[in-house]
Length: 102
Image (cartoon, rainbow, N blue to C red; front, side, top):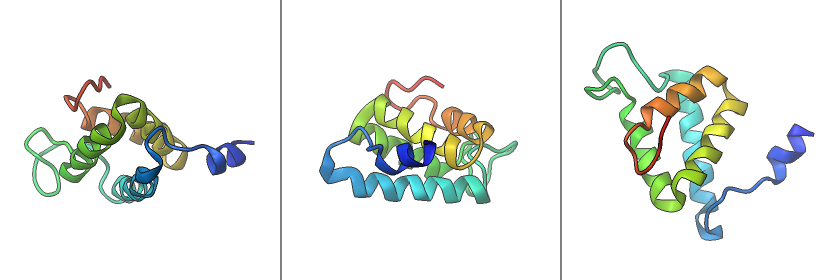
């Protein structure tokens, strides 16, 4: 049943932005698999707060499109596609974006 839910569940955003959100989710999945969203030390691709710089840019864009509900939806997708730990790391990566609270 989870497969069907994933297949038919739609992002809580305007229909015109669903393709963009899908691309951003896929990019976050790739980031999670290759780099993680947090680091123990700064340096490319991580900022001075040891958060993935592109991951934060994506979080800002998601916040602009759909706010916290969309960000929660995306974090849920990351949890399902990767791991709960990486989803938690993404949450901390997004600290201080809009009204997001990890």
